[in-house]
Length: 73
Image (cartoon, rainbow, N blue to C red):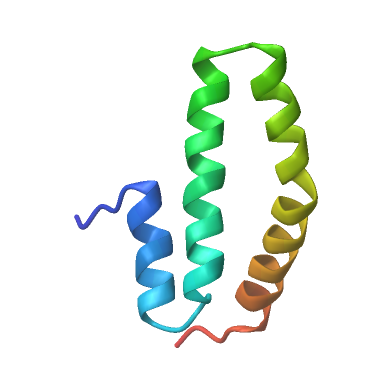
């Protein structure tokens, strides 16, 4: 069974033109932030995480649209 870690999925998506390289970098940053919030509950991290939310929502919608629009053979 082939397995990808979370970040590899997005790198492969960018490599195959499913998302842009810039979107891939944002997704990697979202994942890093998610991991940080699991261990650090400080106010500064919470505020910086909140600043990422609008971009995350836009990227999540774009990714969902791409997935819904793709065809599976």
